[in-house]
Image 1 (cartoon, rainbow, N blue to C red):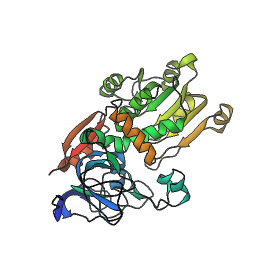
Image 2: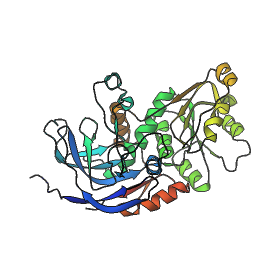
Image 3: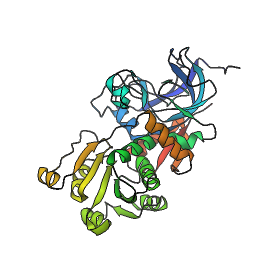
Image 4: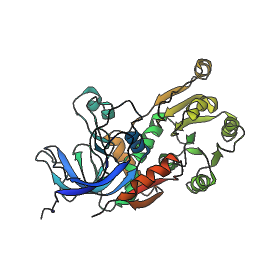
Length: 352
């Protein structure tokens, strides 16, 4: 029997750039021929959601819009062209909501680079609502044994850091420095790195994040707020003091991006993932050339990266630390995010 779908639903709606989001009722959308409608049970809150609300990036947002792109729930309706997922299946809606599937990037597993990409909670309405739309080709089909609250952060944060670690080229036994290790992405990056056989140096600030990083298995924690020489501290934690094989930059400020060049080892790789507003990545040409350093950006993963990242979680190798609060508390989560007071991830529970 097909589930009953209401005409109205509760959502957090950003009416103007800068916010705040307003908790209100809006119509439930109808899926198009190649789309599914997912009844969202839980959705993670990402720093990107804050950037979207504030208009920090040079990419126009839908206005008004519903944010969110880490939504896990149950498929309750689908279009007539959808064959890969059924009503009643569990599914996740990710940052990449849809793409053209026929351009060069889509056909070579780089669909996040598609010029026609649709972005959940940015160019199309996202998962801070009871019912959300996703392109069937891009939603993540989830085994019903997977807990929907715990998997929500994997759908963006997990996939993103897993992709970044793959892009770094780091191999088992190598050392990776993770900057912003105590945040939502960093807490997952540490676990994926360890599951991939890497040694982890966690860089962040504060005692709460130290405790969390050490529980997650970081071999070294460096507190940037108390370190007298962060570069020396990182190097001292690496074999022969040569520096990290890879640096994963998840920070939300510019300075760490410039600092990484000083402690990455020769032939090392710096991967920029965090996107601080209005920031620039600067590196001295001499050191970059002489040390043969690779500096690159890493965006969200493709569909196969998503399958792999979720599989790590399903096998019990990833345990995303999160706190659950109701959907109506989203503005409070944004406040904590701006104050840099979040260790791990917040997950919103969506009302029935």
